[in-house]
Length: 188
Image (cartoon, rainbow, N blue to C red):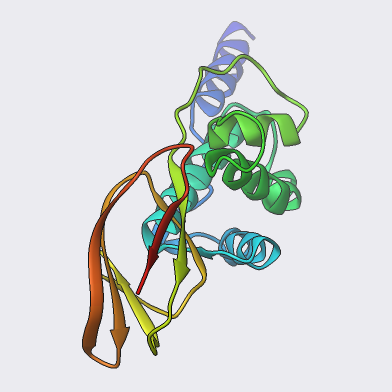
């Protein structure tokens, strides 16, 4: 009888210490489509292109936050799926300086799930670049990434080499220092 209780207790303890599978098993590059769609929806609602490094950072942060709340048994994957758009919108709004103070993806997720707790202060990670062109620009290059012509783009805070393109020809270029809280401008 005691041996049965011991084995049952050992099985319960062992099963409770096994971590749940991560929300994005293949990492941020293999995030569920709803995470990528949430970024795309925010782009459309805010009339701004989200640069690839920002998408990568937001997706990675979302995957980490989702895995954390699932592992902490604060929510399951279905609950995370239901709040994806709200969480991503809150995070990008705050990190871009559009509303409120910046906060982590984890804090945005926990609030959306109704499990908010204490969170440490965050620095603003992203800022907009506004583009105005008088030349026939049909593309942009920001650092090493190519984009179609844009009027606004959300980029990480920091230095960026921006080039306006017509085909493969560079019409103008500038090194911009995108600072938190200050939208940058580029044009030619």
